[in-house]
Length: 465
Picture (tube, rainbow, N blue to C red):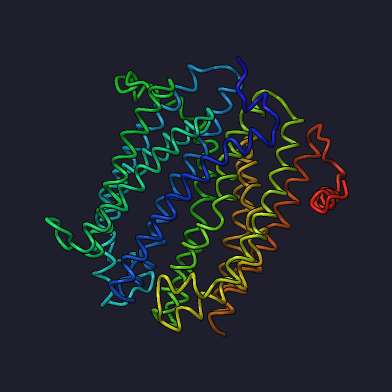
């Protein structure tokens, strides 16, 4: 029986994958915001400590999100080619290998914490708080990585609802232990920032056990690879071929975040705290776009493996419009309600002012940011990871870092303006790269004007068609 990813109409199939993914992400981001809210009750300095820690935490996640993109693309292509045994072997080896790799990376993080966070511009009096938060995360990051890779394999098969429920269970676990461990409720010790980190690690462990169990049930994990792990590593070659450029692309974003954090540190802890808050809110409101970008790779990979160019054309057109509409809708929301949203996390006037100006500048470019993001995911799905890397390189390194750094000499608002400008130019560049690829295929989109699609949607909205 053919997979719904290959046979179901594109829009419903895409929504059926993206909706559970969006819900899972929404739960995760909501609990991260609750995390931020609880820490905000401890004061501005602990909140700033979380913001200084965020680029390193984001870097680790990005390293293995790139790996997950490779796993998702290769497993999805194998399933599209009806080779389920190959898909299971690759998924199993990937989970085990990258879980072990993460243990080594966590040890490296523990050894280099002082130097790394000092380099990010962390004030000496804030450094102990940053380490208090990050040390448990370094120790437990292997559980997070196992979860990311297992989830990527499940998404490649289109198993979305069950994995979303697991993410929700993990989120609730995080929320409960956050409250118990940060404030020391009942028999639990009052651990402040360390408690927030420990709650996160506990939730990772819960999710990992449930996610690997689900992968086993879906024939995407086998314990047999434990006995032949070294011999089976050659199966990871296609994962690395896509994953290494994807890792490089993923790492560029947190690197840019780290540089921006460093630039903002010259403007005080309020600017850094505001940036930490707005980036979390941004992740929450862009959940739909982020979910679409995550499911894009396995959706495209299966259809690319099955050589269904017509469905690839449709997913480009449909996902592009969905991204633009979502971005505009939530720009309007955060621009109009920035003050009440931000005041949930901090009542400091400077933090509120910096955060509001971020949404006015950067929020306007949410659609552009989203278009660049889904294009990189599309290229991973069609085994063009270098194109994905180039798009991210242009947005993060060539544009965002220099524009934001130069802007920091004039004020915080100019940093936001630099980020917004980078988003716009990157979207144009991503569209150009996509058009060049389409010309190498038998694509119906060659010469197509996307504005006609927006015009038709607008007419439907007005009831004219």
